[in-house]
Length: 259
Ligand code: FPP
Image 1 (tube, rainbow, N blue to C red):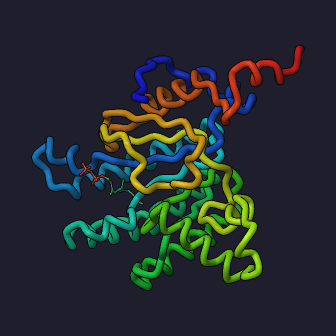
Image 2 (cartoon, rainbow, N blue to C red; image 1 turned 60 degrees about the vertical axis):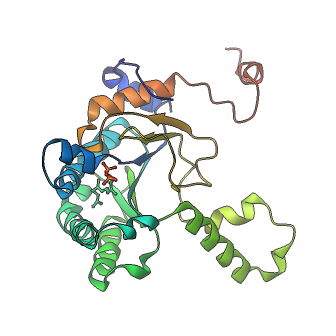
């Protein structure tokens, strides 16, 4: 569904968060950086730099709104196939973002977590990831998760391998609850709202397991143009959705308390 609702929720944000109406978990594919830069006759990396600004603004807005988890796709398992200069730039950018933003994360009580396969990262980057996670571990506000060298299929396969290693006796009779604790985002509820910028309408191997019942929102805005107003619009659209989780509409209303 492409969102077009212009209603702003800024003026009622505190109230909505208090009532548990703001999505608890928002997952974002930050797409369109390269095309955004190309339209401005600039190299693709310029779009990624501006993408960091949009990420900062979105994280602060989520913290302000009372969203508990924001998870963003920064680098997919497939992104290693990009030109080596762009991959190198993104790795350096990641390193610099971690080094520079830790103070701001602490100031805003934001906990940072990184999910994905760290085995292909430089030792310097792994060290920076571990130290930033440790430096923000006591923060109790928004949990910002950056998915880096992440793929949904990798996540499910990795969880399955870990589950079998821990419980070889469980090879038969497995259920969903057995696997969930081994997935990369076991510490968070499944996303309520998924946002993809950049005009494409697919989930691109992001959180495949976790997005099963998530409301999917697509916008043509390129990620560097995504701002507080765009976030408000996505949340307003989400609030207009009826989440049935396999039930029918009448079942949801009949289970509401009468007063
Ligand atoms: C997709 O746009 C974006 C990426 C693959 C990288 C996302 C990275 C950032 C937003 C930078 C900030 C994040 C960190 C943590 C370093 P694209 O390049 O696929 O754009 P296109 O579809 O227009 O080519």
